[in-house]
Length: 307
Image 1 (cartoon, rainbow, N blue to C red):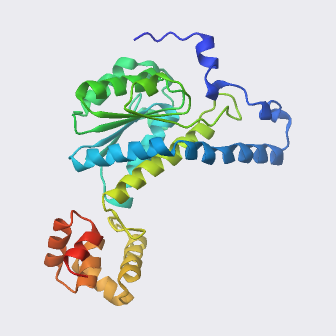
Image 2: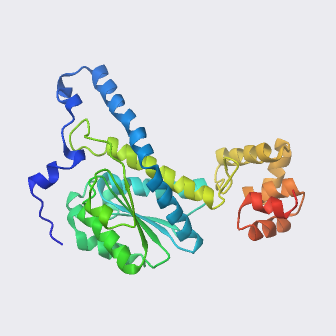
Image 3: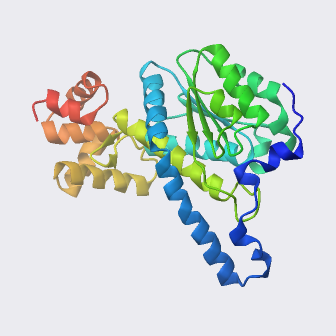
């Protein structure tokens, strides 16, 4: 794939254009700069809202991938790659989903998480090789993240995913874009020119973070990792999280704090099992059986118990 891009191809991108509101930002006071950035950031929410139909399609595609035993793979370079890593890393403590189910790949590898490896984004072939290296198959789904929508490395990951038969999603901040044409579902969040021209760590990055939050959280809810509005697959690895787990059991069952703690200890800190034990007045073995039959969804397990 050719990597030559002339200046006209770059400056036509919305995220590379000058923002008229900030033409003289270098001459503003501190308060004026902050207020201007805040005003521009407020536009991100509406831009994301405009993309809701595509976000819904993507969330359903990812949910389907998980239900058939597949994985979610985020790919990106620079800020976009780091945002994918952030979302993937937070799913284990929040929802009990580890890197066997959600992975994040960044152009330039681990070193690029902490330091810029700018040339890596131009390596289309590396994108293909990196997704091949994780053993992609038709059960998986790849989400390519790029503000420009034309990053060669990320395009490589999408084309590599397509070759493997995996589902593909593009998250971009320009339209039309090459990545939109390379994915089954394209989420284009058009935030407009940045306060600092081309600095896509700002509005574009904020928009990408919002969409990734929406995607992963929606999918986790659909998979039964939320009961009412609590994180019931959270892993209580420290005292703060154990107290949070205790609060969840108290709030969802009405038992005392002391009893909630007892149920959690008996369930070896499996919050779902503790809730079912309390609500169905059953043993841990019965609670786990009900959850298994209810596909891990607390509400279904309680229905099966006749609660």
